[in-house]
Amino acid sequence: MSNLLDANMPVQNMDVLIIGAGPAGLACAARLGERGIASVVLDREPQPGGLPAQCEHAGFGLFTYKRLMRGREFAARLLQRAERANVNIHTNTTVLEVTDAREALAVSPNGLQRYRARALVLATGCRELPRSTLAVAGTRPAGIFNTGVVQRLHTFLHSAPGRQAVIVGSDDMSLMAAPSLIQLGVRVRAVLEERPYRQGYLGLEWLTLRPRRIPLLLHHKILEIRGGARVQEILVARLDANGAPRGEPFVIPCDTLIFSGEFVPENVLARQLNLALDAHTRGPRVDQNFETDVRGIFACGNLVHAADAADHALADGEQTARGVFDFLQREHAEPQSVQQILAGDGVRAVVPQCLRWYDAQCAPVHLAVRVSHALWGVRVRADTAERNFGRAYTFAAKPHRSIYLKISPNVSSDEPLRVSAHGRVTSD
Ligand SMILES: Cc1cc2nc3c(=O)[nH]c(=O)nc-3n(C[C@H](O)[C@H](O)[C@H](O)COP(=O)(O)OP(=O)(O)OC[C@H]3O[C@@H](n4cnc5c(N)ncnc54)[C@H](O)[C@@H]3O)c2cc1C
Image 1 (cartoon, rainbow, N blue to C red):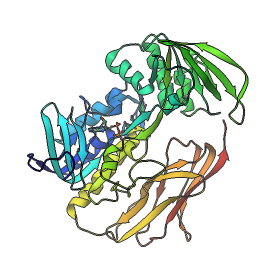
Image 2 (image 1 turned 180 degrees about the vertical axis):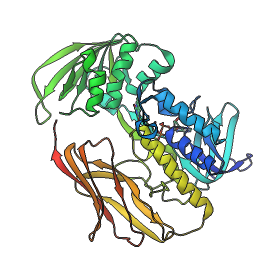
Image 3 (image 1 turned 90 degrees about the horizontal axis):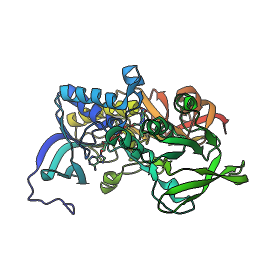
Image 4 (image 1 turned 45 degrees about the vertical axis):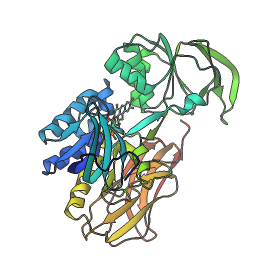
């Protein structure tokens, strides 16, 4: 028994408990429901849908629904599918604790709830780590936010964080923050990026910054945040090839700074369960069905590769449902073969980290691959010492976004599979 779970507390028993009603959790629940397996989905937010439910902007669903949708529309469509499959969703329900006996303790407006399931799915997504703010010199006045706050202010509160903003970071979330701020009546003075290249898509820069003439200052860094009660200005330097300040620093007046933090998996529950974590992704290590190293406990979506597109989280959820379905059919089966997947040359991380097969049948697997450096003209491949299991070419790859490689595994092979990526290292 855990610290919080009380043995005398009434327990709700079920086949499958899913924590997180984002694209990964909802897709998993919907797929299971369509196959006749009932599940309960818990989410701490008042509305299901995860992060897309907070996003007014379009940019979702191209892969799944073949058209660009607003985040809220994408979430609503997935929710409809889950409701048609009779999925039971409990919102305003925060899971405080989980145990390897697949029990969960949650708190909701109805008080403490205790759940016990045959299979447990963690789909808790990721959170924005505002680490970059800590590394900036100067005072800590009011007016410093992260991109997630901008989405919430824009979608739910319709309230501006300030009057003149600078966005720090050039990933997709930062680029999307610019139009949201402008719609809230904020003037966006500039987008700063310390790296010599833009992190987000070029197309998104064309859609969000260029029509509004917002300068994207690559290879620029904040030297100091200045202000008393509120941010008043920032001191900015251009960087040289070694990342050191070059030339005279300059001042940008602003009362608001929007930092795009690093996205890290929301892995508190995974750590409570002592699941094996990947040193690079910081999410649980999983096999091709998103089963962790503990039988019957699954992890998927941004929890295992933060932060990729919602379509990928949805696809993970569907694949997890297949794994859960198989697990419920043969709970005590032992795998016939286990093959490790390793990050080779030019690769920082790969998900899944291993393949486990329980019978002679195996199916193609999509690997989410993170490169070590930004590359152009990327050849990515997966090999054992003896043969190749899949290869692909992609125009460009950046370290914070997965590229996908389809492999055709062989159930009789237990030699480690090494994934490598080669291309021209770019600073562009
Ligand atoms: C600002 C921003 C803009 C984005 N824009 C795009 C875009 O344009 N296009 C795109 O494809 N993707 C976009 N994304 C990425 C997309 O939102 C994610 O890929 C997707 O939401 C991941 O789905 P998920 O189910 O893994 O996690 P999430 O959507 O994060 O869902 C996880 C859920 O778990 C719940 N949860 C966590 N811990 C607990 C707990 N202890 N108890 C109960 N519930 C819990 C959370 O409340 C949350 O609802 C954006 C992300 C951000 C942050």
